[in-house]
Length: 145
Image (cartoon, rainbow, N blue to C red; front, side, top):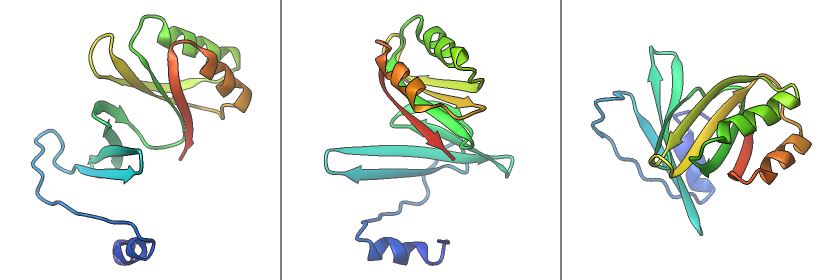
């Protein structure tokens, strides 16, 4: 897939696409955003390019973040409460999983939060199951890029 054939391939698959140009964003002059809708939901992701070669996800569903889209990333949705980072970090550490970076975006203090936790090694399924049992975790997903 490339810039030339992408519109044709998308159209053949029955995906509706609209494009808006000229969005003024003083914080991110190279911002691109994508909104995907499906029956029962949607997702919006915005990304930019720093220094010509450093891609970053800077917003997801209204949460401001700063995430390098690379490697193994654990995405968690939670309430912004004391102890969340400690409990998740302890769980990963108990299974010898090293945290490379941890980025959190939140709606407001004490509100909903989304965390992007980059790790140095894969997270086994049984560790993810333990994560899902933590009362502070609403949902989670492992992404490998």
